Image 1: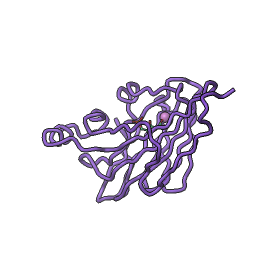
Image 2: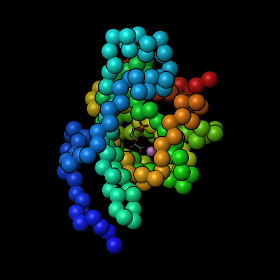
Image 3: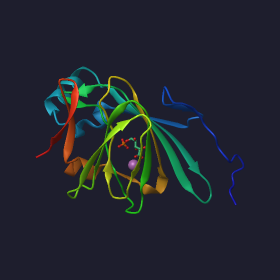
Image 4: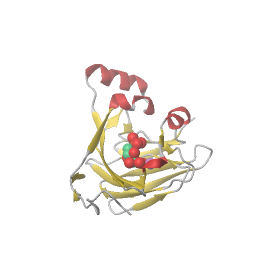
Length: 189
Ligand code: PA5
Ligand code: NI
């Protein structure tokens, strides 16, 4: 039996803005929250001396019931670069080994880098309308290579957990860098 009484839940989603109502939790990620993820550390330090730009925001809705823990996350990544590296999410691997995720690109363009952190890497070219299944044990992040907002939806189990440390330690095999404004995948040493 599914208690509490206010199920089922529907949300009012604005696909242009990447916002929905009601929204119980908004998590902003500023440069200082993911500074170690960018390659150009001297530019990171220089920017942080002046300000701390908002790179992306996550809106969560935990669809928890007494028997399930599915969650919705809508992420809005702003356009921009740090040095020549496009704005991107921090990136993580799920803590549980049996937990996949579905990502849906609602607006914008970019890449979805996927990495086992054990030798296998893919970079999925991303644009509005693409839905990607992220298999368990693949680290994932999203890179906004466009001049506009990138919005995507993620659906996952809350119990999946987010391991950010492993990404900070090992890093993705390739970075998405801007050359003359165009994205290029550059292998990391
Ligand atoms: O669960 C997910 O994969 C997403 O909702 C992400 O958490 C979200 O896009 C933000 O990225 P990160 O958690 O890497 O900061
Ligand atoms: Ni995830």
